[in-house]
Length: 315
Image (cartoon, rainbow, N blue to C red; front, top):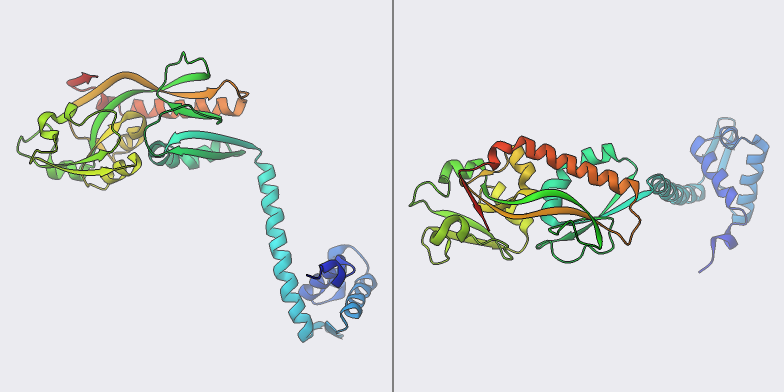
């Protein structure tokens, strides 16, 4: 492939040509480059000589592109436009120097973090977020990330750890579903659809006893492999899901989900935000951890009346 350098001895001539074609005169192009008009004219004449064609028709009214000039101008304009976009993208990336990687569940990212993304960007305009998402339960080590959420004790020696949320489980549904079907512990003959996560940490029988068995005529099961989809189905009014407080605090606070039973199950465990001690704990990571904890504290304050229940179980 013939290189551009062999076709055009001076790339500057293309810049001058593009400006003259866009502005319609050598004088306007000269002012754009802060050079003299004869300098622009010489650059264009040299380019025409190298190409062996006329690019402009010159008249007292200004410059008019020839057919060959129009072909070159379209190509140069498109090329320079793409180069300009790339340069602006590089500049924007360079301006946002703090890259922070988070390890979260898809459910937490979808229903807790992403709805707050506009507020996050307002508070952290220089941060580029990277998400490492887990579709199932939050298990295993946090890995080589800046900040992760895990159900692990604060005494784990490999991580800095900060309490985020107690592990409290609440059956939840949309207001429309609850109005149509009633709560789980309401009419004994009510038929409910149970939205089931295929990798449950807590069994449905803790909330509905034998009626939650798959043999029961009082239930219809819909099973998913991603907890984020379970909750979305519940918000769409498709049935009742088990809601882990750390994920459903915002939908509960905003009324997209409501408790579907008087029963709550407290596991005695908690979710923590953790950061590997093997990595330097940057100030921006500390600030994001504090921001997330403050947001959760605000959620819990808004839904405190929903958390206390006459029927509080423990597992």
